Image (cartoon, rainbow, N blue to C red; front, side, top):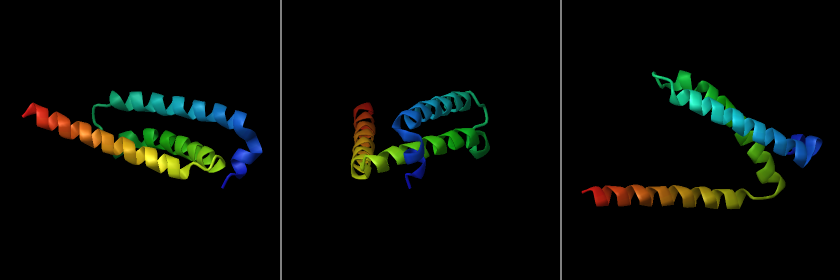
Amino acid sequence: MNDIFDHYGVEIQTDKLIEEIQELLIEAVKFKDVENKNAESFEKVMQEYADVRNLMGQFIYEYKMACEVNTYMDYKQSRQLRRIYFEEETSN
């Protein structure tokens, strides 16, 4: 799994992660301005996300943090759902 990470090392892969996150942000901003939002217009965002996800996977594997990532993801989703519930309750 981490042949790429092992080959390039943490410094280069960190630079690459930053670069790919920037590219994802650029494509997300472009998508925000698209009038007809659909799967086709979302394609470039998805491509950049794949790059970020691959790199994040390398770091998660290297530092053995899969459980922590899942815990954070579950927590953040639950927190947002609580916020939505609270918004709906206070708006009625």
